Image (cartoon, rainbow, N blue to C red; front, side):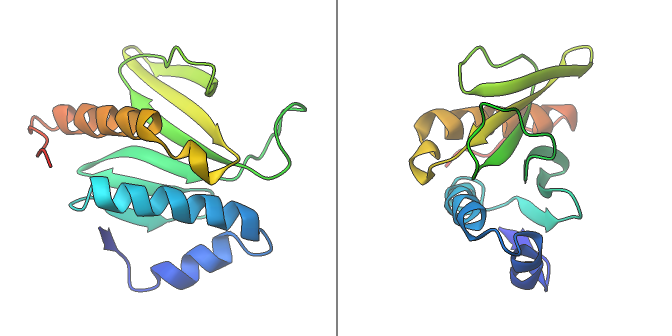
Length: 138
């Protein structure tokens, strides 16, 4: 996966003082890197974004934590053509017709599982469809 020259230090800064959240992100990143080796990752101020021509997913720290959310967690944002009909979807928003932003809460490394990776593959394919390209299959 393509990453900037300062990726490692940027990740450490992003998760400064939040070792458990960083461990969750690292589990996510390892799975993303295997599934989407041709994608790119970029650490930004409020999120870590995953691209392949277009943004298809992101990871962030919750800014407005709901009272029933775990103390240590990260949000995985998944862009799809549909809302996720799953209890794992913490928040679903349709910012544009036919484009849904789905937020999935991760509080344990085991939650980076086949179901999550299937949704991320769908988001990757959806982002590529916007550019008129077909997604390469592993």
